[in-house]
Image 1 (tube, rainbow, N blue to C red):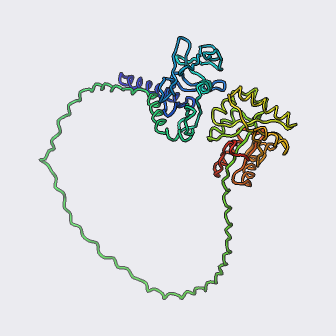
Image 2: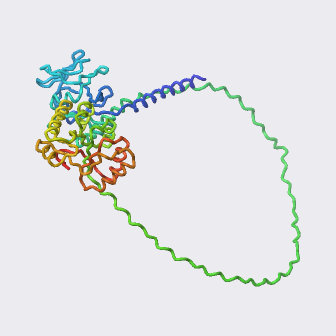
Image 3: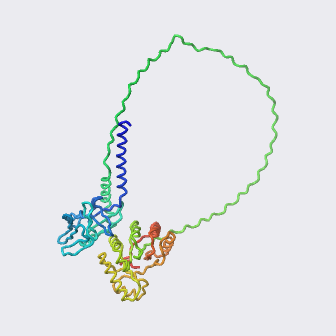
Length: 439
């Protein structure tokens, strides 16, 4: 192999290595943008938010004290600790300590996570302590984590649309930072060229003896005569008359009238907590949909990670209790609300009482709760196969323009995905059931 060929081979190997690193970067996890108030922050792999044990963690470095982009919250790093403060309120996070403390020694769980040289703090703890709101919203290139003061009036979707230019700029800068530096391939040295042998002198033709073209006279052939026989007159040909062809009359074609397309519905989607998993939430997130999840006491006490994810991303949480005497039902509702507040710092007025009659429903309403009475109850019908999804879609088409749909605990990821995909294609819309949209 010549030197020039070795240089080209080495440069090709370098380009392959850069291509592999670029492919690895393109296969990373979903991107999370961060916006605080009305500012989208630069996108960086070192400070990108992530989920851990049901909590969303954000980099503490975003709190710079600037009122414009961090609501005036500042941070200070002290060895293996981070202090996040605003005015006389502050939280102290320490490495390897599973909680944060305020000046009155009250604790807030969970604590920080240390990655590389960066401190990450739970968005839930910081937002609740400093009276902020935070949410995650699907955007073009990933998800948007948005922190803002509770007085910010713009909705998540409206802000994501208004911040499209900022998001695209942050994404382009992030992708440009991943691009490898251009590699200069040196030109191979030209191979030595051997000297050419001189050509022999051309031969000079001998013009002394040049033969002239010979001329010859040609004698034309004599014409050939032949005797021609007298042709016989042609015999008359009788052509038979064609038989008449009878063309049958075409039968009239009846075109069936096309069926009218299904009328789009507005569906208030309600799920039972004992059938909700992270994979079901992933299906709803993929379509940008939210639902109201009714949770019983067992679910509330054992699924804190799912509850925090739901409340942080726009789902509504309701309480689900079995039927019984009004006194026992109300006691159960209060106990469930206490568990919900302990886990998510929130309470709810939305309830579903299994098989509640008029008397029990009235007692629940008098206690300040809003009792779900679904228009389409599918708690006894599973949603696992494409056939069951088609049956549910037919049942939806028979409902009024706006109604509530109650799905039980036998819902699978594939069944829900098929139903939502087909329903959205028709034009149905889905919303969570809330206090202002009773059934």
